[in-house]
Image (cartoon, rainbow, N blue to C red):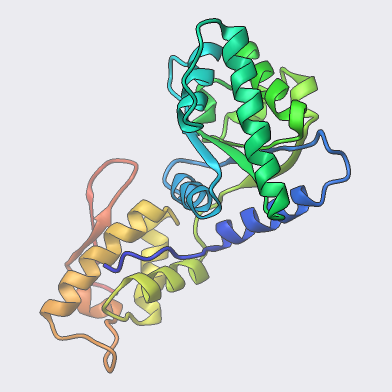
Length: 256
């Protein structure tokens, strides 16, 4: 399977929301929430975007508190931390402001991405610390979660009111699946096989990639290529993935 990044409809929605956020009227509405079920490609997409744009990318831990968050942030900023929380917060603010100023000179957007945000979205102290940082310089802060973060933020109206954009990653559409297979697989497939992959994977990126690996293995072994795309019927009786709900192998039925 080719090691390339495929821009799906979810990625397109994220890019569109980011452009809207960059042009926002209320400067303090600088938070973005990106959520959706596990396995839909949120972390891959946001990590890649952060790397391409030199944004800061943090992964929250289950036991995070405000101090641990600031320590991880300072580590990403390559700043040697001081002792007290007050001093470390000031260090983070100054370093972020400097980084943001450098980006502004280059007319580029600087942002902070925090993955696994569900871990702390009920913690008022962490959320208030994030708000204080973002408010101090109107810093675009992207919180990435797994579906609970929107609900949890309703407990903090002063924070939820600052969410300028919300993006929900949805299961891959059939067009997405066709695009993923075309760009990732060395073995082209017929439309009926792409449709079957979309159906059995539930649109989850992890399951789609597993199916592509199995399709490639079967297709190469049986001589399928550019001139003869692999059809669904050829894979009757073959394992094409794993059922997310029960962990059982998914086999192409004989009747297709």
